[in-house]
Length: 178
Length: 249
Length: 81
Image (cartoon, rainbow over all chains, first blue to last red; front, side, top):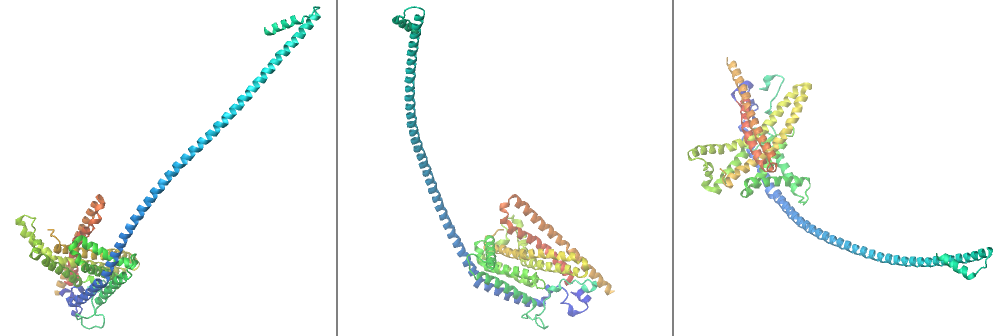
């Protein structure tokens, strides 16, 4: 420190200049109070704080472990419930399909019966109409023969012949047939 | 020497002065000093944090409890990981070291405060304690076999005495580097901030530049404060592994 | 005459302190190398990176301690010699 002292010019200020860290006069004081501080911290730590924190951490670990187990259990329960739900859904679906099929068959049966009924009615109606048409046709043929006979008789008379009913009838019949 | 510079008065070392807290009397070994005050504040802060933090014992922690538990499990994991199961009984010791250093470093960053860890005396005591612990525990656990640490059996035989000498020297340099690293880092950070503050005092309007620099360095110092505490603790763990674990040399 | 000598010694002291701070550059190179190599390794295998954080900090601490030594020499020259 010789240079510093000479420059500073006052020996009393020597300890004020320089590095306070290297002022060995203060070391016993620093070491003493540091040891006091460390001992106090050590006592506070080991006697009070650390056992408490260790206990809390252990408890939390246990609690978390328990919670995890509970969560696992709940998860498996939820899985079982889901499976049951899926099963029920599947069954319901099958039931619904069955009901649909039954209903369809029933409707088909009704439909078939109604169709057959309608068919029968239609064919009955058609047969009646055909009979009617035949009657009308026969009636028409008879009327034509009548008219032809009368016309033929009248023609014969007008031409000065004698109307022979039998001959006319035969002739008309022959003509109508041809 | 700042006197010669005229207007620019920068005395970055003044902040590390130790003076009696009361009166002007001579500095005896028991005299309460400004360093004693900040050691006391450190002790009070740690005690409050740990006591309030551990008092509620809630399963779902509040803020203070979270900090205390985070500190606890951080150091616990570090000890378990580096030192192994054998070193777990040094956990309270390392917990004290880490909480003391980190709290003291961070409190030292408060403006106007005093940082005990910037003093070589403090860090030297911490480092020598670690050194003695490692040496004593090593000899207690392994007996004379602890010296096998210096005899590198994997090296060729002619090299071994030289390596043993180097290992021995590095072993005894450990407390020195251990203490200088922590004290030097903290001292350097404080001194740099002080130097920039000295610039800011004489630069007029341009002093925004050193003030911005102070802000940046302050952020860096926050990081350094935590990292140096971490490094001090983890190096203690590494040294303890030599004493309790299997030799890695 | 003695005054000149004192001034000369003072000059040497300050120059020495300045030279001693060069050592901090070495610490910077060392820390940068460690951090850079850690990062390149971590980017190759990110899953292994968190487990190596402790080694990273220990390496940085060792590299930085040597720089702090030279800083200490500078401080000693400035304030203690």
